[in-house]
Image 1 (cartoon, helix red, strand yellow):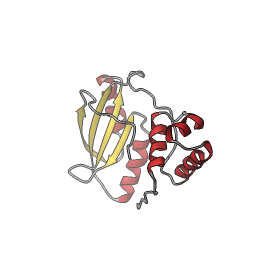
Image 2 (tube, one colour; image 1 turned 45 degrees about the vertical axis):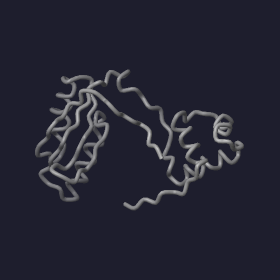
Image 3 (cartoon, one colour; image 1 turned 90 degrees about the vertical axis):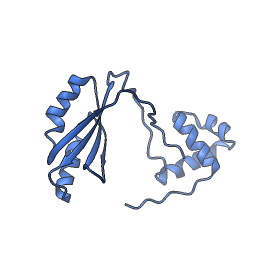
Length: 157
């Protein structure tokens, strides 16, 4: 998978920074903050969206306000790592709503999952009913997070 970073200048960086702080900012306010009129700011936003640099806009919910205070990182080792097995595992893990993140890993295990639950009992249910039933799972190791020291939903450029 090859990615090509679009060319951006300091004004684009300012626009992106402001949109990350508040994606609902008006074009008028955004224009004032970056020092351009509304038409060029709107055109720059459209270009950033079309280039894929701005991938979308969304409401970011607070897991804590939703009662999802328990975070566990799970190492997963598979019995089979051929492409068909990986494809099946990937599709199945995407269907588990409590899996907040999933990464294929190069190292001593195959996948790293971030699982968010209400509490330990909820996590145990997720592990027993969902994660253990994923295709080709050989073994798992769970690591419970005690505190989020750094947790960013924003990428800086």
